[in-house]
Image 1 (tube, helix red, strand yellow):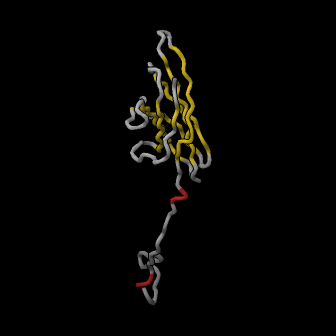
Image 2: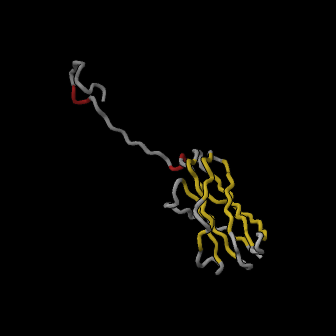
Length: 139
C-alpha cells in the first residue's frame, strides 16, 4: 500500500493498493534422491553377520536441503514387503547439487538375497520419495 494511513493528500485515495500474483517455481526447492547403496559385511564377536549399509543422498535441486534424512529398509521377498532398519539417519544439510553419505548398521543378518530400499526426505519422512529402489544382494 502506497499511503496506508492517508498521510499524503491525494486526488484519488482509492488507488493506493494493488495486488499481483506470485509463483515460486518448484525448481527452486531442494530435490532429494537416493542415488546408490554399498554394503560391507562382517562377523561380530558371536559369529553373527553384521552388514553396514552405506547410502548416498543427492540434492539435485538448486537450494540447500536442511535436516535431510535417509531411511534404510530391507526386503527378503524380492521387494514385496520391507522392514525398516532402525530409524532414519541424518545426512545433515545438503547444498544444491551435492551428494552426502549416510550409513546404518544392520545386525544379526541371515545369509541370503535382499532388496535394500532407501527413502529420502527433509526433516521427516512424511513425504516419501518416489525414486527408484536400489537393489543389493547380500550373501
